Image (cartoon, rainbow, N blue to C red; front, side, top):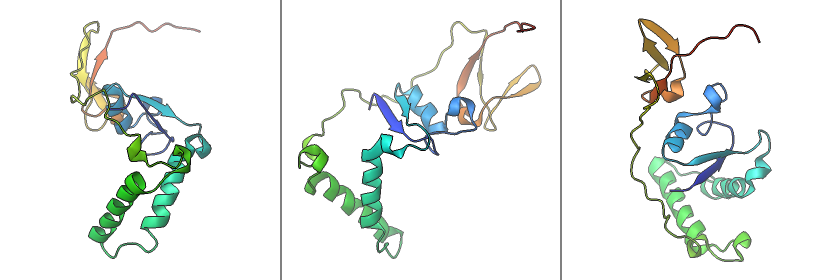
Length: 160
């Protein structure tokens, strides 16, 4: 597993209208201990290698497209093999990505159980993004649907 994943600010990596811009995918990554790194909005050059790979992928697998889903999937699989094992990359000193690949020292162990020992109550966010407490429905965020959250009673301070 990677220590961090860099992405743009669009779906499925981020949700501009959700709490902290998180998406379901980025919540899952955070639970796995993967840091999220986001490029500045409107600056694809900050993720240039990734954008360049997508351009090559699109050029080589969609022109012409496969005649059906199985043929299109075969085009993608052929591209992945060539890109990683046969095609030298200028950015890699004319070597193939497979020559640099190594297994991660962080193995996937599944999602860890979440506990909030210092909170007053642990609730599960509903599928529609709410928490329910004392017959009240409080909108939280749909990206946390099915996740446990810890809440703590606090006082509201008046004034600034």
